Image 1 (tube, rainbow, N blue to C red):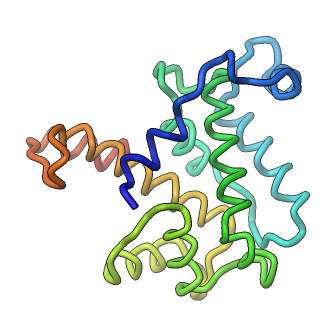
Image 2 (image 1 turned 60 degrees about the horizontal axis):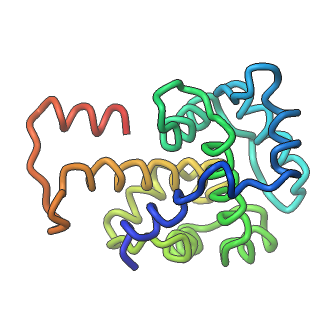
Image 3 (image 1 turned 45 degrees about the vertical axis):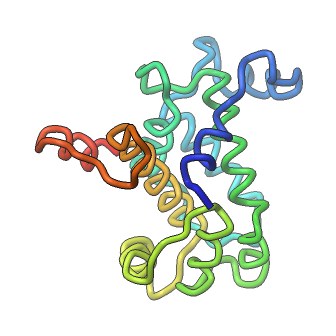
Length: 188
């Protein structure tokens, strides 16, 4: 699957695409400023995952929520407006409802093999070496819990998105200077 198609197709929504029930939920969650901060996102996501008794998780960290906001934040405010939050919400629902949900329902976490399958179902076809690196980075005692899986997906998506900015012709290669490389790896 072409990761470029996966990433852009999920972000093609506008405010007119958002239904009234989501608007009401967003207004309640976001408060007076009508935006969701990293801290508010963490609270929201941790409430959601605690309701899923089939998921093993220690909860989302501030770092993982910062990564999610960074991935979705289009205006650079470090906060999510209603459209941005809808995009993120759709992604999380997709990740919960994908074929990975079969894995979560069995044990509440996934093995390295199950993670490979879940990443593929999320649209990322990766080689063995990269899969091993991701498992080493996002697992604890050879198992991956839900929040670490989401963090992995967020990081992968951010890196693909950043790379695509440098691969303007879509050749699969990119040319960048050291500053661009540092920006991509440190901020992606």
